[in-house]
Length: 122
Image (cartoon, rainbow, N blue to C red; front, side, top):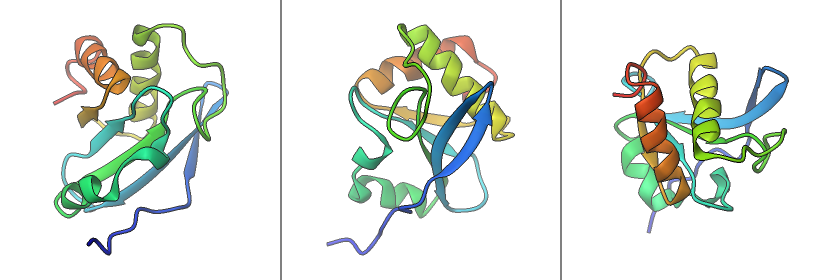
């Protein structure tokens, strides 16, 4: 049984008129892992038992992409647009390089993000 709990309070960052919700925790140094959630999921859906071992070793960033969960705006119509929004979010945090972990539709967004932003994604 785990005693790990993910932060319950979201932070927000404004990007081109959209307020993106995210939670950043885990180690303070190292290349962050950005998690891209599944279809109809929010950052609330990540299993703490999966996140804990990663957060013990790496910075972790969970976020709700545009139009999902606590993030405002219109949900993009394509995977390519979702990847563009994820890239804007990552860059707005001032990050030069990240690892990404995507599940379900998040996996498709991760692949597209890697194609679009090869220098940003390790």
